[in-house]
Length: 79
Image 1 (cartoon, rainbow, N blue to C red):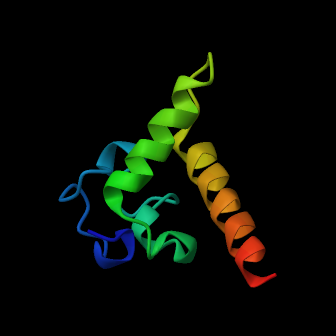
Image 2 (image 1 turned 90 degrees about the vertical axis):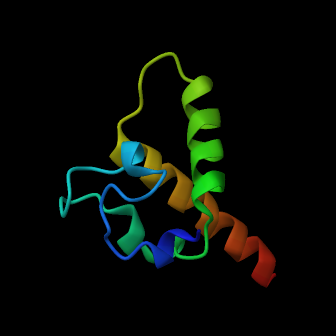
């Protein structure tokens, strides 16, 4: 399922471990950049990023990094 379709049904998705507490500041399904990203793809990218780091990355930093990469790819596509 696409992250944008989750509509804050906190805990009823496969990426709940990458989110914050329900209705907290980090709510992945409300991030516009992630609306068209599949849950499985987000998990894959997050796990790949985490595996390349010695320290645990916070969910917020993980989300910011993934969103930054998405924006970068979108800019490349417009050129």
